Image 1 (spheres, rainbow, N blue to C red):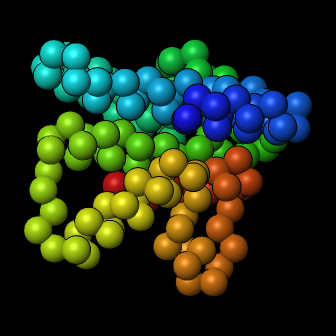
Image 2: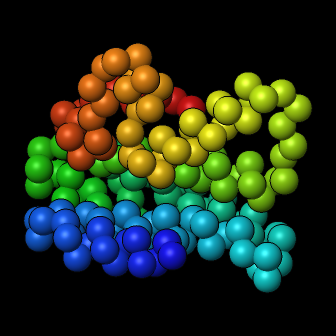
Length: 147
């Protein structure tokens, strides 16, 4: 189902957005592949650690992985900062650790954070009535949160 959704998004997205979408979907797949149950646990942690570092490099404008480089180039060509996808790795880290949420507020906060990473939007800002910018709509050099 997810593959079909991505295929439809790619098919109906404007041609100019397709390279960025392909890169974004590739990064998401790589990060979430660290959660495969068939992958040995220490390998999962090692791969996720690398991806956490890579998403940090992407946020700082110095990516190494071809998909992250492609995404950064699209953003740069549009005069924008590369998207900050660090929350995607944070979500995968929580899932890999099998963290149990004691309070409903903890779960809600985690899900908002995860949805923000997936949607590429600051949902907390949008819920306050502000207009949330997609990562490729943020001005170049926009301040990024440290966590």
